[in-house]
Length: 141
Image (cartoon, rainbow, N blue to C red):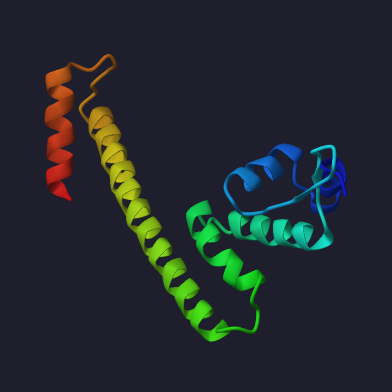
């Protein structure tokens, strides 16, 4: 099928299909005129890619594990699953660490705003005062 048909069948834009190809996630066939030719197995693979991306997994991880998940379903499935789950857990842990940092930053800003309101500081705040307040808030945590 042509790219427009594959786009409709998968619910993914033609641009995304080209991006998946550029990233090495799919390899559509080519017609004699050079146009891409998508088969149903490629569309199925696109659906799996889309699902994994919507789950928040990075392309790097999908690229690494996708061939083993879709091309060799019976060969070493337990090993692939274990490796994949380990990578997903590792990615999740890194994401949780980033979220914790963002939560800390948000808490510091909330405390700063509370302090600014409590002391009747009005924007624009003096830079030296702002830095002192932020440092004292950061030291409280």
